[in-house]
Amino acid sequence: MSTARLTINLHALARNWRALDAKSAAETGAVVKADAYGLGAGPVSDALVEAGVRKFFVAVAEEGAAVREAVGSGPMIAVFSGHMEGDTDLLRQHSLVPLINSAEQLLRHFEALPDHPFGIQLDSGMNRLGMEPADWAELRDKALSRKPVLITSHLACADEPDHAMNAKQLSVFKAMTDGVKVPRSLAATGGILLGREYHFDLCRPGIGLYGGMPFDEARPVVKVDLPVIQIRDVAVGETVGYGNTWTARRPSRIATVAAGYADGLHRAIGGGIDAFASGQPCPVVGRISMDLITVDVTDLTKTPTSLRILNGHQTVDDLAEAAGTIGYEILTSLGSRYSRGYVE
Figure 1 (cartoon, rainbow, N blue to C red):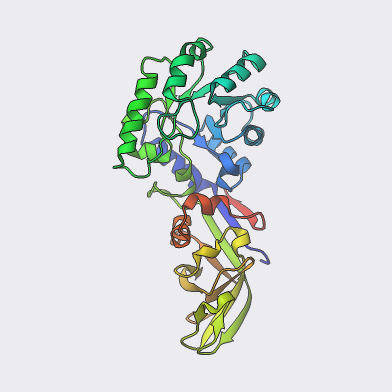
Figure 2: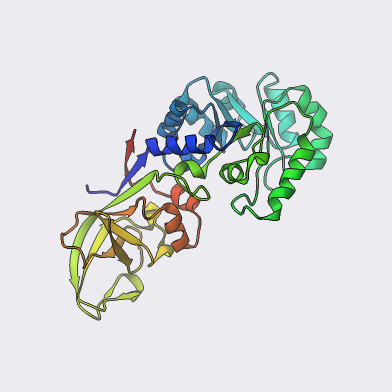
């Protein structure tokens, strides 16, 4: 192995979807935006179709086209950004369902694709995408006359179960949609875990499928193995890496592995994480650089040829906590230099 290797366990991914699906009486879709959170929209979507997914969600129409190629003509693919200028041909050619966010988008869709399915996205308080209550009140009758296939909104604080914003948004969403005979969707991963009141007709998990929090029952989906380029002996008092941030306090053996912040292993991670040799943790030392990470392998009895930095013991959320970020960012920034393998 001469390059870092990213292994995606599609079996674990499917099990995570089934576990989330079991928590709800509603239909369960899947969010595969950002190239399925960096893991490959084609293989991931194909595995999820086999598991039973019939409704997918992407960020933009171009992503939807890639997912359509993977899943075929049957499943619905909804586009969170709605009907943007220039999207018409993609929406038509790939049978994508735009989630309309504004009066402008509604007009564009009705004029360009009058008989094409669409959904509505409402802003229940996140102030990001969707029609606000006043806009919806004005456009509601016009939109409903064309029979949207779905009405959605998104929770801002679902990963904090006790946050008051959850109940507030639930109340607003109900007020905007009660009595409307259109399938409704409010819950992503965090919303599913909040309970059945948030589930409505369709849940749409994202990060939980890929092994991330707040779904703590998730099976790990991603492993990352880093090839060892060189191992050197370091004397007491010598330093390792940029900025002399780590100093040897004992005679040490330091392995330099082929990966770095260009591969999504953020420079901010610094210390506090390990790389693993056959399950044995070895501390990462010194500063992570663009292409190289240094690891203290002094306590190993055998010289490793590779070290694993993501596994069932150390997850994307562990790396994220060390970097002061979130698991989503770690997953989606895993770079293109990895050789990739999929476990079916």
